Image (cartoon, rainbow, N blue to C red; front, top):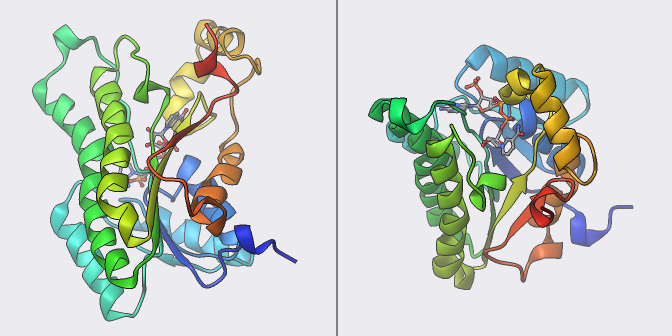
Length: 255
Ligand code: NDP
């Protein structure tokens, strides 16, 4: 029997960027805890394939393909949820991109694209979700930060700024929405094995740096975010607000 503190039965979770990577792993983890999942990404075919695979695994999943950087698409998606009686009880703002370039060579458009995808989207989708959560008197928002929510690294300035912003956006959400029964918290993953990091994983020097620098001496697996995601989506975290939990094999705690 599921411990009620961690039971998500009857809840619907919108996980942005859940067609693959960390979002997909967290979506499956929330589904295994009982939630119905709205699977998101920009590519409808990839979203459809993820929905099919999740259903075959016995999970409840439905497609919600939209571009998180398009306010129009976000607003339309929520209007569609309203029209079909779908309530987003849990929002995971996970969709994100990386772009590596030294700042002196960085075009403003590339800066803006990373900020729009990794930070502004979380505000816009968070706002649309929270309006409805406030009316219902409860809701869970989980924003995906990074080690760069706290520490800078060369060549990824816009990503660092966006993820630092995610930490403070999470606190701003808690400041305004906690009294309405919403808990907004963040997860800061360490170096995880996903497509986003393929170039780094394939680089022997970087791979060795990650393994040496991380106290756990290894990269993280996407499924290792599930426990924290379920905790922050579940009644177990009902008095936790505005926090960021690093799931990083100890990296941020150690020099
Ligand atoms: P992936 O590149 O593996 O997956 C990204 C997901 O986001 C895909 O489902 C992609 O779908 C979706 N996505 C990208 N842009 C958009 C958009 N504009 N609208 C909707 N969906 C979009 O990334 P990860 O799983 O590695 O990363 C997920 C999150 O975790 C990101 O926020 C990232 O910054 C963060 N993170 C990752 C770490 C890591 O080590 N991997 C470490 C710390 C944080 P599609 O391409 O079909 O649009």
